[in-house]
Image (tube, rainbow, N blue to C red):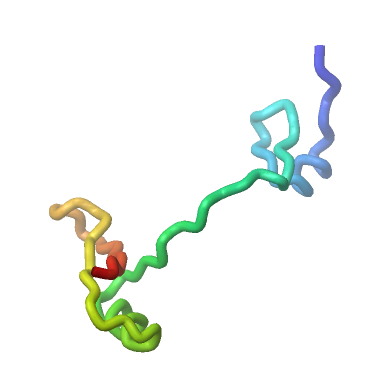
Length: 74
């Protein structure tokens, strides 16, 4: 049987409470794309970054009430 990990250690390492062990912080993750909720914010960011040709793509479904927009450089 594994040794019990105390809650203070779980909070420090960011481990979920239902897991027995601890999750180390050395996990490598890729960068996620920058997303926006409005087209105006996406266009303003593209102009600030100096993008000339770009496309705004909705990451949510077409029937979703909320938008999650991503800039795709052409």
